[in-house]
Each structure stands twice: as structure tokens, then as C-alpha cells.
Length: 618
Image 1: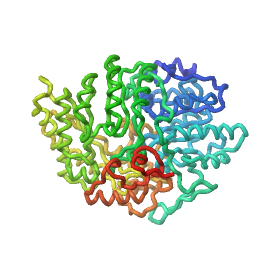
Image 2: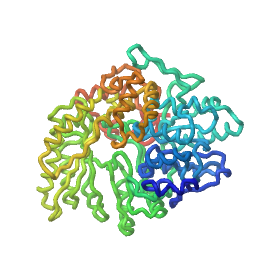
Image 3: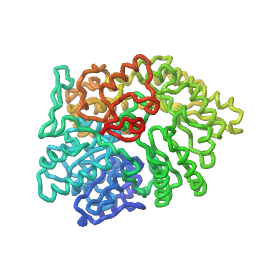
Image 4: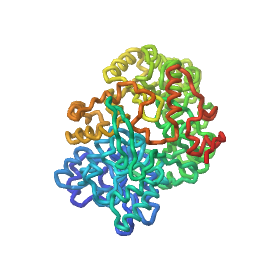
């Protein structure tokens, strides 16, 4: 529970339930009963962090151990932070109210680059030095996992350890090692050198980076016997992987206020902009029996009335029909909604639509990503307009009236015709609704376009691409909106300067650590929130540090350039990504993994679709 001295201030902040703890299914353990205390930090507000599946999995995994505990920590909003700083209340964990500086491990999940300043702010609120080199004691060890650590270099000065890949196995191995080294009173440097020998553990301080005269990376050199390449951890069999049977139920409505159960990891599709699809190869599926058991257990323990079947492309799940056949009767009986996010418009069968009619409907979401076939070929989306409209017609005939379509702008080789194609495709979906004989009577259609800007990311074929500057993106957004001629189509768009800053840190190197620290000292945090993002302070920080941010976004990289993340190994080879980059500029597509193996390199990680194709590597 929260520190006693905080109680008199809680009524002076918005949403005090963010800071109290004591929720249903939270795990309370005496601190003196365990050897390792783990503070799991989400560097954003409670409502966002409580929606994150990774936190729920690792929270339960650590608390399953008799010798360890895990407690949750979130970034306090600005009103709460002001009170904590004024009254010298350190950042604390929700379960015990104890300062996180007293824990053995402080772990951050890094899901988006614009949370970097929040990490520094949380460490400072905990009374800890923000730089790894200035934290000399063995504990707390500050670690990070999640999507962003595929390029850990911009935050290399601040984290002791990062964990690329799946965390379910390596977390326990790291806890075991720290327990051993803590018991014998080892020094921090001794522990870090030993930790670097665990597969899937990266210790930034054990690597030296040199640069060429043009500012590009010349070489990354390991020291202290650290591996030259850090290979991501990969759980091959998801049925044997730890999975929680209960979730902490938040006091406040979270961003995704429902049960989330993972049905597979990875993706077979190879969309060339999609970092998650490449980072999580190979695709590995859970069995329908395992998924259903987890859904039932979590619903029973939490009381949620909606289940989201989580994946990168839900309709690619081979066991979906069997799973829904088993789940729908009890979901219907208990008035539980089943949400299917991340559907593809080319393999959403009519039978599935009819099955979902028996439970409450959520809006359907599809991601064409581009408005013209030429551009969909460039990004390897491998769906046609005919398939999109056919699926929309099925949805409308099945009773749906709201469709959300995800698109991107700023894609390589993009023209005005491609931008106009987005508006034209949305209009075609509207027209398809009114041409359907079986559409819902007396209701109008709503087509919502979510318009993102391409941020080229590491470990994608577009990692060498220049990123459109903010003013160019604004022009493209305005042009596209001018092409929309009906009120039935609504357009929401991202803030281009946010995408720009994200792009800087996505492909940045260690020199950006000074910029991040400088901006934080100027007061920058919650940079992913439009109302908090301070463009002027960031601009000043880049200037003061002598860093040109467009060096990281606006230039075309040579295919042979040493990239800041080249010493990270996520299975997919650089050679394969280079081939995909060249094919993109030729408008050539690559088949999905189940149709034909393209030898991306992920087979050496074992598991899933690679094993199905006989590509197992021992």
C-alpha cells in the first residue's frame, strides 16, 4: 500500500486510485521473506501500464517463486510528481509502498521510444543516479526489456542490463545469478561480467563504440569476454511457457480494460515496415486448449466480461476455428465478449463472422496500410482492394456498421496518387455498405481511418530508409484529408513531430544519451503525450549537445553501413533485410512463411512455423 505520509495528499491529485495499490489479485509478500525483490516499472501512467500484457506475465512469473517478489511501479502524473518532490516522498511500489531504491532489481519495459525521459525521471524520483556508472553498489540493478531494447544504444548510459527477446526464461536465470552474487557480496562489475554470459543478456558497459569521421558507427567492440553478438531469447514452445491464471484488476479503467490472452508470437507475413513482425520471428502458436484454459481461468479470477485474443495477425492463427467453437458457448452463456484485434482482410472467413454474431460485437479493425496496390506491394502487404471490399461486405451483412482502417503515410516511393488512394479506398468501403442488400436496416456506416506516419525501425527492410520531415508529413496529411468527400469517413492522425522524435531514437546511437539527459533536466517527460511534448526544449537540447537529429532520420543509409544495433541478433539476418529493401523499391512481393520459406534466418532460433516447414536448426 502507499506510504502513510502520502494519504493526506491523495485528494489533491487527479485519479488517486493510480497510487494506492490494494487491487484484486495483487500479490503481497513480506520483504524479509525473500532473497530478491523486483520492482517492475512501466514508464507511463497507471492506466496505460495496467493494459500491458508483458507486465502481467512477468509479475506473475516472479511472484510464483518462493525466493522472490515482484511489485508494480508506474510513472506518477505531473500533479503527483510535484507533491512527491515537494515532500521528499520517493517513488514507491504499489504493493508494499516501499521505495524502489530498496529493491534488488528495477526493471523497465520499454515499449516506445518517447518514454525514455520518463525512465530517467523515475530513477531520479527514486533517489538514484540516472547513469549506470554512477550507481556503484551491486543493487539495485537497473534492467530493461521490451521492443525498444532491440536498439539499446540511446539508453546505454542508463541501463545496467537489457534483455532482447522473450523474458519468461531469462528473467528467472538473471534472478538466480543475482541471488548467488548478492549472497557472496560480489561487486557490481563482477556480477555484470557474469550476467553477460547468460544468453540473451546485454551489458552496455562491456561494449566500446567507435565512430567514423562522417559520424557513422565504425565498430562496436566487446570487452571482458562479452559476446560479439547478443542473441535474443526465444521461447520455442508457448504451451510450456509460463502463463498467468489471474490478472491484477485495476481500480481505474485502463486503456484496454479487458482480459488479454496471447494466442501466438511472431508473424508469417513480412510487412516491410513492421518491426514487431521481424523481431518476434519465428511465429509460434499456442494450442487452442491452452488458450481456452487461460481465458477461462483469468475470467473466473478477475470478473472481466471481454477477452481479447492477442497477436500480430489473429486471423492467421491456425487453431482459431477450433478455439472459437470451444469458447463461444461459455462466452455466450456468461455474456463475455470476444475481441479479435489485428485481423487481415484477406483471410477473415464468413463462417467466423457468423460465429461472432452470437456474442456482443466489437468494431472490426483491418489494416490495409496503403491505398493503392502499387504501394501495398512496396510494403509487402499482400492484400488486394477486392479482398478488402469483400471482407467489408461480409462484415456489413453480418450486422457490423463500424469499421476502422489503419493506414500509413511517408512510405518509400509514395506519391500523391497513393495518398489519394487511401481516401478512395475508404470511400469504396462506404459505398460497399450501401450496396449490401443485407446491411443493418436504419443504420448508417462509420469508417474511421487511423493515419500513422512511417517511422523506419531497426530490424526491418526500411531501416535504411530516410524518414519524411514533419513539415512534409503535415502537407501529406492535409492533402489526404482534402481528398475525403464524405462525413461517413473520419480521419485521425498522428502528430508528425512526435513521429520525428521517435524516429531519432529508434535508429540512434550512444551519443543521444546526452541529449536525453539534457532534455530531461530541462523538464521533458511524458513526451508521447501531445500536451507534454515540448518541441522547443528538445530542439535546444539537440543544439546544446551538438547533435543534428536529422542525421538519424533524414539521410539514406548505405546498405553496408555498420548500424548501431548490428551487435544485436534477433534471428533475421541483415542480408535478408537488404534483399527485402531492394525488392521493396522494385515493387516485388515476398510470400508469407507458410506459403514458402524465404530463408530469413529465424529458423536457427527454432520453434513454430520454421519447424512446420522442416527448417529446424539444432
